[in-house]
Each structure stands twice: as structure tokens, then as C-alpha cells.
Length: 133
Image (tube, rainbow, N blue to C red; front, side, top):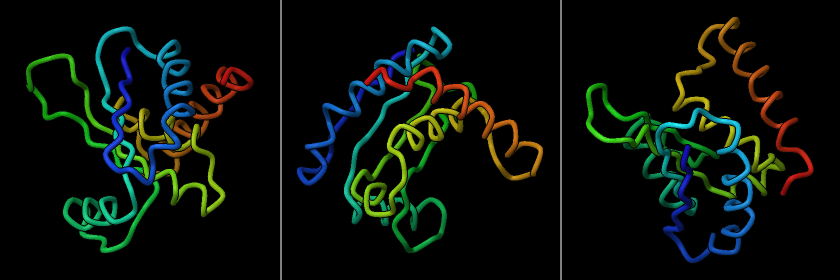
């Protein structure tokens, strides 16, 4: 699977190298077919996306958007990360990327059983990633 990293804002450019390493390593453990675009954005842009698509007028760490069903091409979806928000809230950048990818791949955390499955998959992927970037 391909995980191209796209920087949309100057303030987050310094995270490019780290996210490229994480994305490259993570792609080795994912299904081979498809592409998920990873956008690195600032808090203002994240807040706007969160408000527009989720109705929440506040910044957040990660947003994932699956492509519509029957949409042509190899693109599976898009992930938006705000690394400044993630760092400020002492969250793990790799975990947030893994979390976003799993949403694109169909995992969610609406029900307790689904949350447990998703968290277990996150832990397995993070263990595979550990020490490799």
C-alpha cells in the first residue's frame, strides 16, 4: 500500500521526515493494493475540516475520509493529521497515523467490541513499527 505524505502548511513542514519514515514502514504491514493520501495540516485547517464534515467547531488530532463506494481508482481515502495538536496533547504521532489508516480500512470504535478490535490492531501494528523509525 502506498501512503504518500503531503504537507499543506509551512508550520508543519518540520514533521515531514518523521512522518515519511513512519508511513513508509507502516505501508509494509498493510494490504498491498491501494493508496491512502496523508495530509499534514495546521490547527486552523483541521478545525475547518472538523466543523465542515463532523459539525464540531474545534481542532482535533486526526480525521479520516474513506473514498465513496464504487469510486474508481486505487485511492482508498485521505487522512489529515495535525502534528502540532498531537504533540501539544502528548499523543503519539505513529499511533494517530495508524488510527487514521485503520478507519480507512473499515475499523471503528462506535461499539465497545469494535473499539477493542481496533485497539488490538493498533497495538499489533505499533509493535511491528517500534524501533523502526
